[in-house]
Length: 81
Image (cartoon, rainbow, N blue to C red; front, side, top):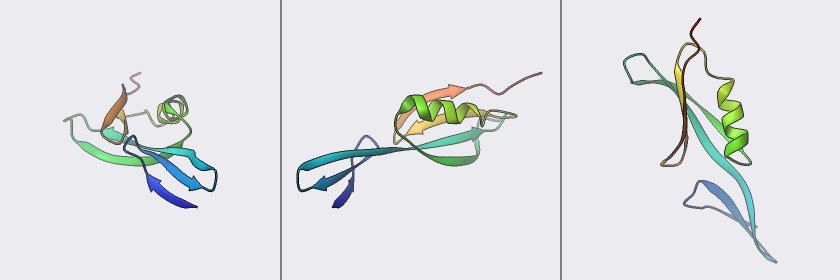
């Protein structure tokens, strides 16, 4: 098997039968109150739905921007009490 990264952030593997899709890579960026990135967490998920669910768990004192490569998937607002 030879692995390559596709343009959409998904990995693809060449097998003897052709191409087999893999998992997608995402980054969940924590956004500070000043709008700057204060950290990130790399996520590997089957699709956007799984990535969004994982990113929701990261929302606390900061907004979270979930990206797949150059594509913004969603911005989640911080929890306010």
